[in-house]
Amino acid sequence: MDYRNKKNIDVVRLPQPFVEEKRLKCAPCSTCKQLVLAHPSENDTYKNDKKGVFLKKGLDSDVVTFTMEDDDGNTIANLGDVATFPNDDLAVGFVYDWQQIYNTHGHGCYKIKVNFTIGGITGDYTVGTYTLKKYSIQNARYTVRVLSKFNSASLKYNVDFTDSNFEDSVRFFGFFGNRQPNTEINQLINKGRISDKVTRENLNTYTLRTDPINVCYTKQLLELHLLHEDELFISDHNASNHSYNLFDLKVVLEESAEVVYTDGDRKAKINATFSDRIKINKSYYNKK
Image 1 (cartoon, rainbow, N blue to C red):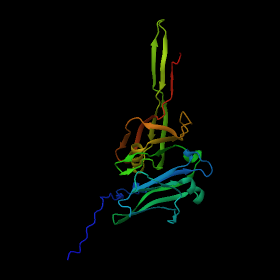
Image 2: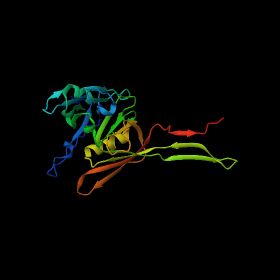
Image 3: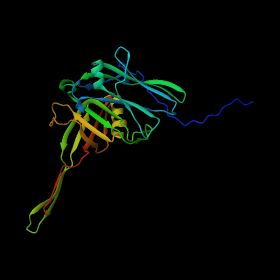
Image 4: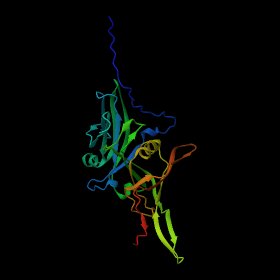
């Protein structure tokens, strides 16, 4: 008698967390603590960071849990919003709200972990470790904050973010600004040999330069935000910036980002150019 049972299941992608070797005396880069800020009473989005985490299950019966630990290793309640993926029944996620966490548990060090049982295989990994501080001019100084909202399908992650509420932010040391107007001028010379304006438009571009950053930052920027965002907002907090009014500026990546490496140093810099997503900086001849 044949007691074998055959069960058909879809091919699943298991999470593949990577633990770095300790090749140097310093700690592995994956242990870096990322700065996050929140204001206890002011709801300006650029003052309150978010952290979105997600994972794709293989079957409806698979189990995925997201947990947060405080600096003492105690598991605390998740505060934020459950991520919804109306076009992907197997995607699960959570968007941590650092303002709620600050108001409930205060400043300090927090760790986000994922535990999963997918396709009968159980595992876990750490998403990241975060140093939460109160938003202030001093604590935000020299930082750039990128906030992305996602509304399209990802081949890399096999997740359809379409119509989801998923968002994520990352704060790092660097600079954003140096607007260049790139004015396009369209003039006509009339019969009286007078040059008349037809249209004039500023196609603004902005420069993003990171300080030397660890791979935990470059991976987030290059593989998640700059590749998958559908709405991108950038804020700058540098005292030397020509403009102090660069808060949640809605931009789009204008050209491929450049990564600058230095021999003998694990850190790298990212340079990128952005332009206005809403292009209404235009005037035109409108005489009847």
